[in-house]
Image 1 (cartoon, rainbow, N blue to C red):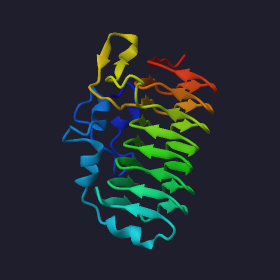
Image 2 (cartoon, rainbow, N blue to C red; image 1 turned 30 degrees about the horizontal axis):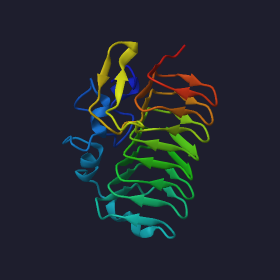
Image 3 (tube, one colour; image 1 turned 90 degrees about the vertical axis):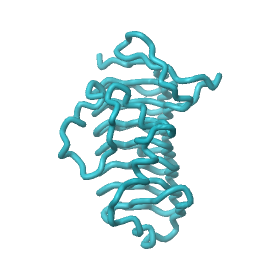
Image 4 (cartoon, rainbow, N blue to C red; image 1 turned 30 degrees about the vertical axis):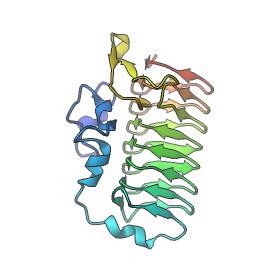
Length: 220
């Protein structure tokens, strides 16, 4: 867990971030079968800005599957679509025509940009998916930036469970059919990069544009 997201060890970095009971398998919160899944954690939040959606115009909300929490300081652009359960933290910016599907947890000071789609994923504080991105069943670490057109693919073509390799050692079956990527703290991914399901980047990894990522990616 802290090998990929070391800044999580500082508990004073944000007011609301998910809890990881299974620190050996940080992807476990992506599973809908777990009691502590992202979706269930958002549903169980007890905070006082749940009804703030009423102040937005030209934004589409769907609360049929769970609540939508938006911090009063967050900025939501026009023609954004947000499906609950969803959490949007302090000073977050959701730009024009973004699509937040259920299970999106957007932590403080993060950005979801124009035509970017987030699904069952966590953007930890300060992370950015600012231009034409797809982030599916993934976790972006603190102050991660993914360039325009980056896609974090989350399903194998053969629909089998996603396997991961921790530090290039023995492969592990995550038990998940949908799992995109874990992007370590302060990593930077260039434009038009595609990551295959189960990709893990070490913290502070720099990726050049137009690459395809697989497995465990070291910070060289």
